[in-house]
Image 1 (spheres, rainbow, N blue to C red):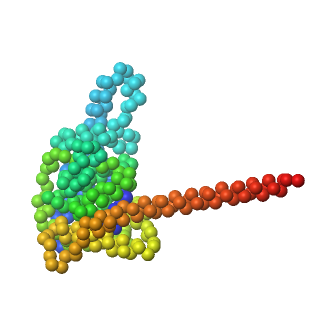
Image 2: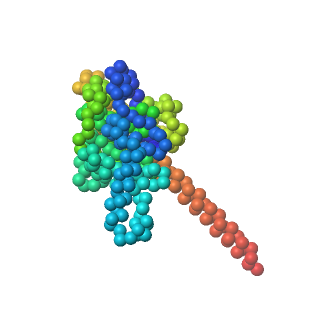
Image 3: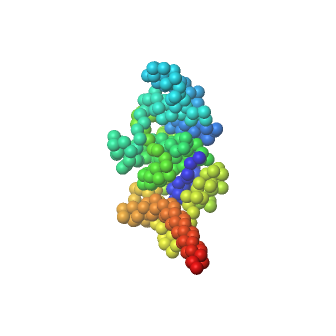
Length: 314
């Protein structure tokens, strides 16, 4: 399973006929068994291009090549199965080989050769993300419309270019490995219809409005990541994020209008920073409480020991 993005990055875009037409044209496979890598690849290439048998065949080919590097069958037996585990999860070597067969290269986002995509992810074409054997795809359609094609989602999820970097950073904080993909992707119907998609018509969806449509695991993850932090400043932070989101939608879809909301870079940066810090604050608070309780227990033990010693004195 995956953790869902914050409620400020979750939007309902089925608000106009053109938006519905574009979204319905996106090929989006849903999760089935442990075949998330297969789903991620097919969602990336926008067709039923791969099956688990294709990956298994590549894994077998890699096993044979690796076997040639070992002097004995006994030595090879120690690493046999590294390319696919008993649950059907394939190694990064298998996936990389499959991508190379399609003219696409995969590079970890922390590598210096793709630093530009870390700093400006909107300039990339697509990303593959992995955590705990789960794979998901982030893909750009047309020239600027990014979609989260995670197979555990009920439908593709729009991510505005402004918040794409925040989304990726959140995934990294949650333990995901993010890979940039480079190469020539085949055209698809959704690419052709991307020009009719109007992101300014997307409506931010709050947690309570969105979780009913999510799978149970996704509901739990979303709830944990969005727990109310309380405090007098919480409402102002939410308003700032909502405001920044509206600006990002305006910027990504149309020319500035007289009634557009204006926000400076410092305000947007602060909003993003507040969003990233929210989960960290909750974790830190829990750790502090745990430490405080442990210290209290230690003090109680010391007090009991002191009393016992004093009573034993003649």
